[in-house]
Every structure is written in C-alpha cells, then in structure tokens.
Image 1 (cartoon, one colour):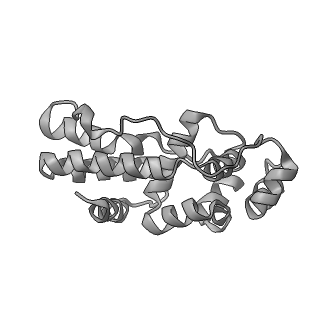
Image 2 (cartoon, one colour):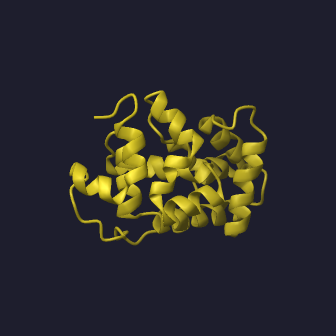
Image 3 (cartoon, rainbow, N blue to C red):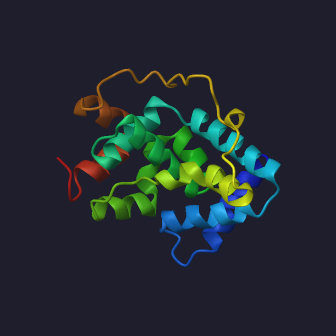
Length: 183
C-alpha cells in the first residue's frame, strides 16, 4: 500500500459508515477493510501512517490543536492528528499547510459548539489492529518510524500567549475564543 492507497482506504471507510462524523466507526471500518488485504499491504499501511504522523508533526498544527481543544498534550496532539487523517487527504493536507484553515471545517465548528475534543486515538491503531485481526500477530516493529521526530515549523512560543496565537491563527482564535467555551 502506498500513500494513495492509504487515502483510498480512508475514503472507503468513510463511505461505509452511516455517520461520517463518527470517527470511531470510521477507524473500525478502516481496520476491517485493511484486515482483508494481504499482510504486506497492512504493514505498508503502517509505514504510510507513520510517515503522515511525521509529516504533520508541526508546531503550527499543534498550536491549532491547542486552540481547538482548549489545550493539547503530546498524546493529545497524536490523537488530534489521528482524527485529522480520518477527515481525508484534502483536509489533512490543507490543515498541515495552513492550520488556520481548520476554522472553516464543519466538524471543527460543530466540536467547538458542542465543547467536544477533536481527536481519535483509534485512528493511530488501524494497521496494528488490522494486522492482529488478519494474522493473529503483532505488526512488525520495523513498520513503525523509529527515529525521533523533530518538531517542524519554528513556532517557538508559549501557546498560552494569546496575542501571539491570535496573530498566527486569527480564524481559529476568533472561532474558539469567541464561541461557547472561549475566553
């Protein structure tokens, strides 16, 4: 499986769930679909997922997750990016390139209105769970990215600095800090 195949898996999974906002169901469906593929495809899917996580490990995106979720730990940032992957290739790519664009996403607006956290931890385990379902074994360690990640983007400031964050993410801060749980 290559990157195109991974994104097609997400599209297919989203198309097979009754509620496209149910990220847990999307992750479960993607896991089931992936489990039906050959073992090497599953392992390759983990490599793609690891690469997408590495490519999206950006301080600007972390700042957006921090604003949207009212704070964001390192694990929370992983779960946020898992959720972001389930939104599809175009949304993922746009958010990585311009995190402030997330303010235009209906799912983010709904989460803000409902004071919900935007994340999906189970998205991170799609290949591992598919491999276990298909083979009964754990996915090989070499399927995971092993070198340490370096946070990209140069946004070296405190995300609680409201003046700075408003300058860098004006649409998101307007949405999140002027909405139901804004400050």
